[in-house]
Amino acid sequence: MTGLEGEPGIAYSYILAKGGLYLRAKNENLSVTVNIADVEVRGLAPDQREYRANHGKHTALFARAAIAKFMTKPDIERYMAITWEGLAYWLREPKQEAGAESCQL
Image (cartoon, rainbow, N blue to C red; front, top):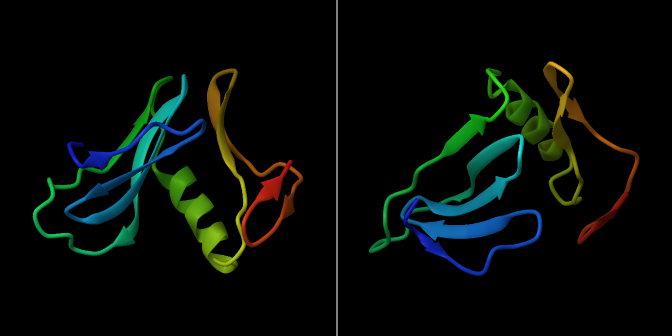
């Protein structure tokens, strides 16, 4: 993606592109870039969504399941993780204290 990208965050980064605001996260298991605010921003580079598993094949079902769970309480920040365990990916939601501006594991 060639949008406006600031200094990378610890867990994820924000990118502003033609299609809106994106969240990008990368680690040793996967790379993902998802649109979190779908608006047209004229004059910026086009968007490019990415969802790539680094340890073999799996579907975007995990990401869709996490997003669906987040949307049940969109005003609360929560943490979920797609993990690689042995020979398979898993969607995990650790025990946490979630609030409007943060979550504590």
